[in-house]
Image 1 (cartoon, rainbow, N blue to C red):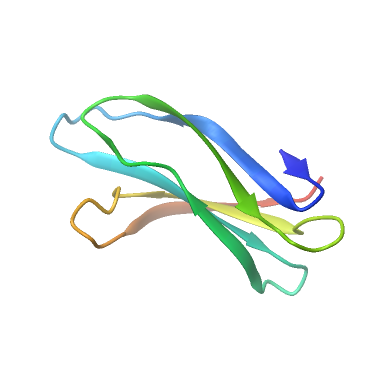
Image 2: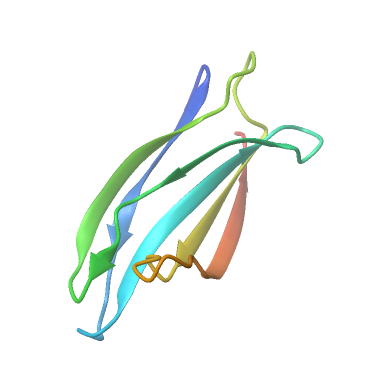
Length: 90
C-alpha cells in the first residue's frame, strides 16, 4: 500500500522445509530507479508467519516503484535475494 512518504509491505512468508529460513526485503525507488529506502521483515525459520513493515519513500507522492524480494532470511549474516518483483505506483 502506498502512503504519502512510505510504502507498506504485507503478506505471508511460508516455508515447507523446517531447516530453512525466509525473509522479505523491499526497496522503494524513484522514477529514475534510484533507491529511496529499504525495509525488511524478520526471518521466518521452519514455519509460516505474517509480515508487515513500512519502507520509507521520503518524497512528495511517495515512491514510483517498490521492489519486493524473497530472501534467505540472512540468519548467517549474508542476505541472498532469491526472487524479486517490481510493483509500480498505482
